[in-house]
Length: 145
Image 1 (tube, rainbow, N blue to C red):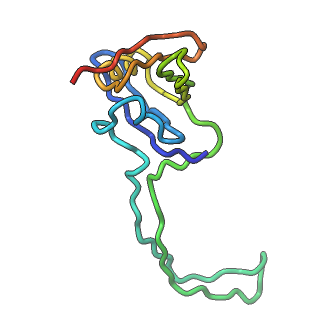
Image 2: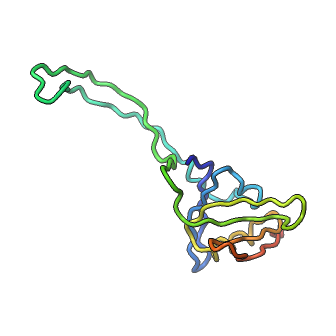
Image 3: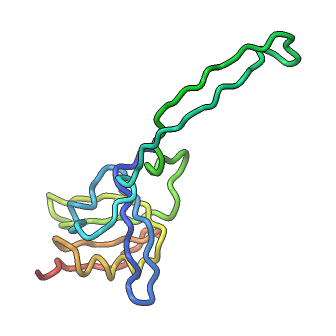
């Protein structure tokens, strides 16, 4: 599944941070992400050259053909993933119980305590954090500037 952002949540004292997989780019609605590293945008395009060589059409081909040298561009480190995302599901809810309630789910690989500690410094609004068991882990008020 294509991921819009893979935010790197930093360690908070003794609590281990981790990768925060934001599939649709919704974390910026709940928190300020300017201090985070986005692993998806760290991709690098490199030029790759292929040497000239011979190739066979089939096994024991009596007349192999030669392939000329060529070059192409390859993209590395773009965070492409196949299959399920790593970590466990975390759900953020803002304005819980009100008509404008926003509920979004993310995948996270670190500890919940580190995520909540980071969110206390960066939250834009009151955010309820639900852990992998579906129970309310913390209600984080908006960070004071």
